[in-house]
Figure 1 (tube, helix red, strand yellow):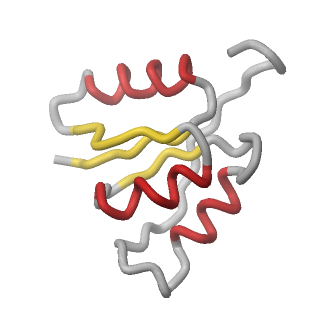
Figure 2 (cartoon, helix red, strand yellow):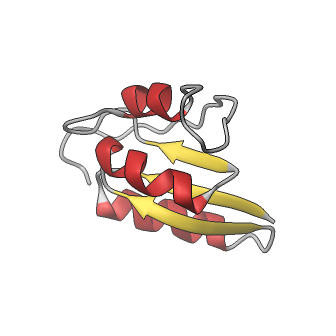
Figure 3 (cartoon, helix red, strand yellow):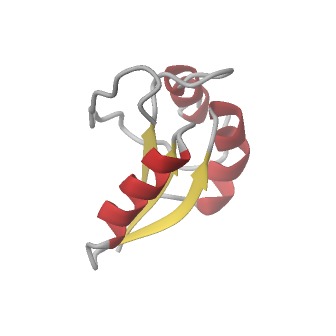
Length: 93
């Protein structure tokens, strides 16, 4: 079972990603966050195998959150970065 944590400031995108992932019996969505800052608090205790991160979020963006989540001082797992891309136009979500 692959444990996935979804981070996106768009509630619509979080629901859509979660729905797609949950349709696979080999995947379990273990949590969601609406910002990079929230992800830093919620991801480590969830101990996911994979974290999906929106790049463009208000406040702390996904790349900044990724750097912090992968920092050696964090007690959680370290994940190799991967890419899943999508394109939305401004204000579409």
